[in-house]
Structure formats: structure tokens, C-alpha cells
Amino acid sequence: MGVKLEELYDLVTQKAGFKGRMRLAVRTGMSRVKAAETEDTDKLLRKFKDEASEIIGQDVDELL
Amino acid sequence: MALKGKLTEMGLSDIVQVACKGKNRACLIVQSQGQEGSLFFENGQIVHAILDSQEGEDVIYELLTWDEGTFEIEQNVSPPKRTITTNWSGLLLEGMRRIDESAAKRDGSDTVMEFERKEEQLVSGRSPPPDVKKEDYSTAKKKEVFTMNVKKLSEAIDALKGSLGEGLITTDIWTAADGQSLAGFNPQPKASALFNQLTSTMDKALKGSGFPELGRYYILDLVGGQMTICMPLGDYQWGMLIDSTKAPLGLLLNVVIPQAIDAFEEAIAS
Image (tube, rainbow over all chains, first blue to last red):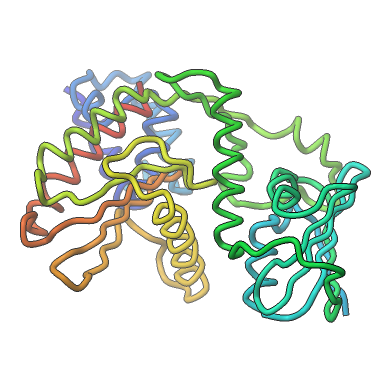
């Protein structure tokens, strides 16, 4: 459940601090706790990756 | 030589701080939408302010609401009279408080707060490029409107209080843009405003030094067995004063803060 989404949250926190994490929460409308409980669907993963890439200024696929 | 600029590039509160710290005799002229206000500085304080027929502190509070226009500082100008005795930092804090108060009245909601942020400004803090008209630039900006669930925010504070008990002396969550308090326990508005400045100064120092930017938090070890922890959360900051004899650092960093951040995140994501 939400393993990859949670990984994205951790990556953004590592690269952009809580500031980045909060931006990801606002942009996706989903907190880290909720993300961990949600299924990793392709659609959700794409959205999270797009937002995370924009927040940290780097393609997250290169970092995962 | 006169120092000139635009309020979009340097806000009035920043200009006042620079002028007061310079401790010179000077006159600051601010122009916006056909109006012109003047502030007179002497010995590191604002001693007189005038706007049309209005004089004194109220002029400063009015000028602090101006976010567009131009300014010019003339050095070695004597004040024509003295109508202000309040310390400059007190004037700025009161001005910010009034702005927050009027914004809260406009919002008119006590359970959910709505914010609109300009993405371009958030990302870079830049002003419109000189070759782009301000109106065009404004409409081109990507705007993002989001809500803050104040009830959940209070729950985040309660969770922190529950975890730390008597170890928590004070805590406050405020907006990074203007230091407006959103929720807190035994809140200290002055400390919030000043820590807001401190975080901004640290950001600049780190950037200027070529160091990585601030991460999840910074901690100040204080005398008397106390410490402050400040967490930059993007548009918000969360600060707390802790009795370290009653709340061990390990517990704070590994248990309490992660829980508090989860709760805060629920408030902004819900």
C-alpha cells in the first residue's frame, strides 16, 4: 500500500526538507500518512513524480 | 546621493529597518497611486510621518499596506517636527498586526483559512522582469489557491502538547510571508515575527555561503536548560520553546516532531 508514494515523500523531504514535503502535500492534496495507506496506482504515481520533480528541480526517476 | 527603488523589490518594512539601523538623519518618500507619504528618521528611529493631512503613527500603518509604488531616501534631511516616539520595531509589529487583523476580517472564516499564492514569487522571490508589464505578468502567473484546516492545525498543536506535557513552554505556527499566527500554545507574536526574520537571514547566509539550504529544522541551545526548535515548512514556520530537562532531544527529533509534522501536513493537505 502506497510504498512508492511514501518513497517519493521521503525523497522530497531528503532533497527539499519539510518545505518541499509540505509543497508536495498541498499540490497532491494527500499527506504522507494518507499516501502510505493509498494504493500505488499508475495515475497517482505519475502525479506524485511530476510534482516531486518540479519541487526538487530534478527528474525523480533519475534518483529512485 | 538618494537611494531609490520600487516597493515590489523592497518592502517598506525592510526599508525602515535599513534606515533605522543606519542611524542617519534621513527622509523616506513613498509614492503610490498618486499619493505621497514621508517618513523622517533620526538616531535610528522614525520621528515623524506625514501623508496628506495625516501625521504620526497612523501614517506608518497606512504606508505599510502599500505593496506597489516607488521609494526614495534622502540623507541629511531634518524632520520638520516630531510626532512619533514609539520604537521603530514596535511600529512595524503593530503595522503587521493591523494588516493581519484586516485580512482576517476580510476572510471572515474561523474554521478554514484560504490562501492564494503566486507560484512565481514562491519559487524564486523574483519581481516581474523589467521588460514585462506588471499587469501582463500578474495574469500570466500560475496561481494556486489552497485551504488550511484550522481545526486540524489545532489538533497538531494538541498532539504536541500531549507528547511534551510540561516540557513545552510555548509553540506557534505562523505564515512565513508576514508572521501571522495560525495556531499556538502560549503564543508569542513578537518571537514569531523575529524568528521569521532569523530564518530569512539564515536562508540568505546559507545561500550566500554556497551551502545547502535549510533542511527540516534548526535548533538553538539556550541557557537555563531550554532550547528552541524552528521548522521551516515552506509557506509556514513552526517554532517552539522547550524545557530540555523535561523533553529529551532524542524523543523530540525521533518521535514528537515526526508526529507533529504528520498532523500539520493533514491540515494543509485536507
